[in-house]
Length: 266
Image 1: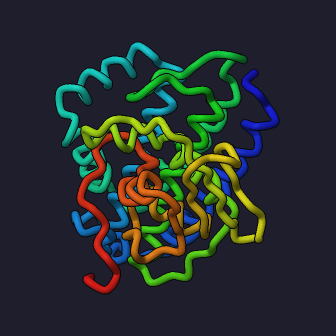
Image 2: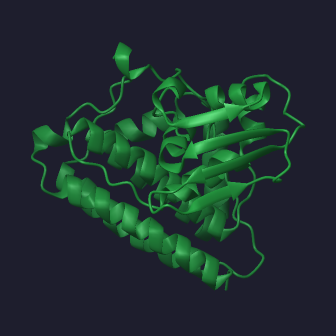
């Protein structure tokens, strides 16, 4: 089985993040599911539909790799609209059906991830991933879309250490964030030291790196999921390369989309 100790911890955080969002939407009337959550017009239903579709795709990548490969061909043929069209289709389902299906899909993916043999990689739209990496990516997406839903519904959004998974991906994808914008990947190291909600320090990179990023781990996660403008977070850079990175940091695959708008301009 795949690295049980690391995988178990990530799956536990994924379940907790999902249950939090589940509790927010479970009691919503149909009008609540129609609440717009993003500037692009995604509703609560789109958000849950997108998470459910991605869970299904992840499960297919593990259990039906040939079927998943056909889905990748469709994505390659429509790289901009593929994800949005899937969310749009899911959002048409009645809320109670979508919620029940999302719950079932979460359980099925958890089981499938635990069953992946040691050392085996799972195909994906980007590079193949280990089960722990795929589970971490699911935490990141669930965290980001939960934030969209909570903010749109006016709910208090708890700051938890689960944001560390988001930060980890944001740091690991530093080169990708440049490449996806047609820039050269940076060669200089950056030291990242972030403070989690519980006061612990999350650190990446050499201690003697020439440039640094410091500040709130929760706020860096908001930056990395492009939910906040760099001027609206408690995250600071030392050095021009680090400063530029904070304007383009991106924890998710695909194109970055529109830049976040400053809170003062919303």
